[in-house]
Length: 239
Image 1: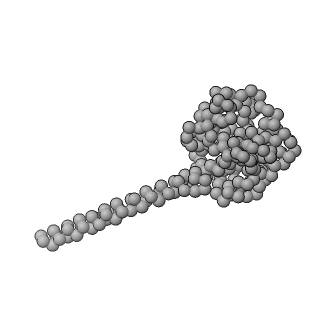
Image 2: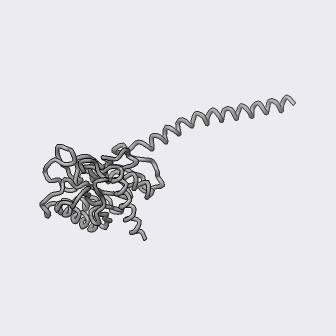
Image 3: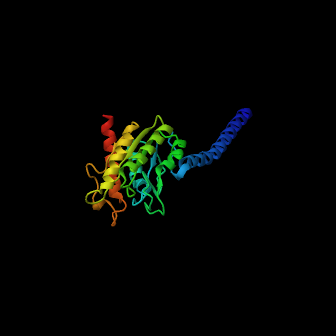
């Protein structure tokens, strides 16, 4: 009888020790999970190893300017709809083809080519490139060459990635000739490296209700519209 009681005591002691160990491991696991969900380049990587990593390259419009939160910007909405793990590398002051002047609210305009090494290091399965297009260059030949160089560098660094280009946008009225030329240059250049193109100008997507008062940034409705077109275009290509 006494031996049976002693056996039960050891059993309960063992269970208590296991419980203590389990409770000690929980905070560690939670800390690891939180770290994986927030760390990474540009502070925008969510841990989802079973989903394709999609890097978004662009200006502040692609980065979510005008949206009320990262979740309502078009890159976030698109990623949620298509099951991608979003990594945003969009940066203010960048453009497909710098025109040697201010752009996107920055003191100088820099080329997307400079972002290619960081994109390659992220090893994504998908790269999405977009632009508001406010630095569109009136020099058609120079602009086309700069855009082509960017997509060639991207393909050279990521030979197996899916590359998607989202063209420039205009919030009201007819797009300028420079925007139309940029739209054509991006379409041609991404196609040359086996990528997909989504135009926001043809057919026209946005109106004044989808931008801020100055028409310089998309609002939440605008971000939703862009995401809807991207998802619809990619979905139709899969069928």
